[in-house]
Image (cartoon, rainbow, N blue to C red):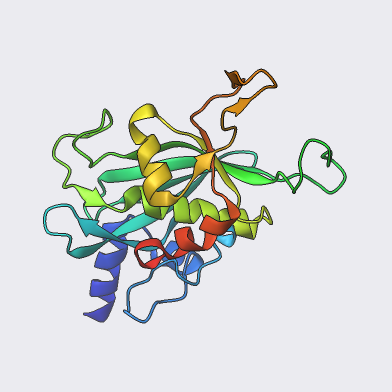
Length: 220
């Protein structure tokens, strides 16, 4: 009977027992297999654990399953799915690690290594162009995905640095909730005229907001 129950659990996740063991992570104190103590970079493709999110209807806690996929050299996709296999959210990341001596101190004051986040989506959020009809609204999807990206930045020795290009409708989320800032804020020349040669939606996580991001909504 126990074997049948275990097989049922693996089937629900689309995994064999061997695949499940190969991606096994350290369980959290709640008994739920979250990513709290997981080295995400060392995980194989497929299911790697769970993240806590809140239901949009009553803000009660629930969990989504996290899946990892390699999409190119130093490029990875992370997707969040519910227990029915519906895709609730996802993002692509690119790890850009600069070797010592490969960057100019004249151009950069600190190591420019970072993780670039692209195509971050919460498909369950009704007021976005990416909403998928029928999905229950889940809060914290974007936060959890960015925390995964931040973990990968730390693991890849990119100092927890994150960069992304925000959509106009999501820029306030990155600024006010995540604590990101414009990478190239407008400046003034000697004539007092504002100029900016860069995309104002290019955003980074500043040093003083890295730890708050990792702890936001309880962290991974």
